Image 1 (cartoon, rainbow, N blue to C red):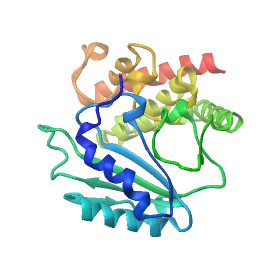
Image 2 (image 1 turned 180 degrees about the horizontal axis):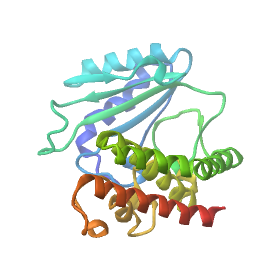
Image 3 (image 1 turned 120 degrees about the vertical axis):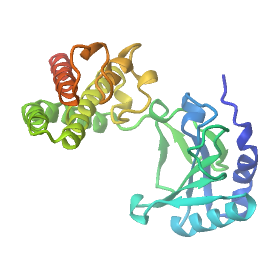
Length: 267
């Protein structure tokens, strides 16, 4: 079933008309959860555009038109260095986006200079909703598989090489009573690498998507197993323990043991 984007109708009309006002725009698409799944009443609208010439100039023109045409509460602009060939911002069309008592209206816009060859991997990003591409510049094709395989291989090799150092760092922080440090290290060295390995095993095209989309990308029940390893109240895996240190120790060791299982299968 197609996502219901009706609460963004005014934005979509503006986006469709933008190229008439900003001729440098060559391609404008909607992507993100609107096309990959998971869209709900609190999803933002992900917009990606490509242009000829200087992307910053086109971005400024697009943002000025949006401000003039829509009731913009505020804009978060990412630093210029975020994208080597473009700019990104989050346009809030209502105050207090964290107030989920009403549907969210927030637009994530990225404007980049059109590369010599513009492609999009639908395995990773879904099939985009194309609002403007009169010259057919956007090609839907898979990313370079050799390059992706090299990235996956490196991730596995690093997980193997880092395994003992990572566990030592977490255990040491727990033993010292440094709960904040231990929690951060547990997430960074135990949970996140585990999820990367699970992704390599079960959804290799999205191996680098981190902790997002676990319920759609991993086999049924696996997201819940990962969540049971996160910091928080005692669950079924740690009912016999009570202190935060004890809970984190149990969960960290369980995460590393799961890493070992997946590494044994991958290597």
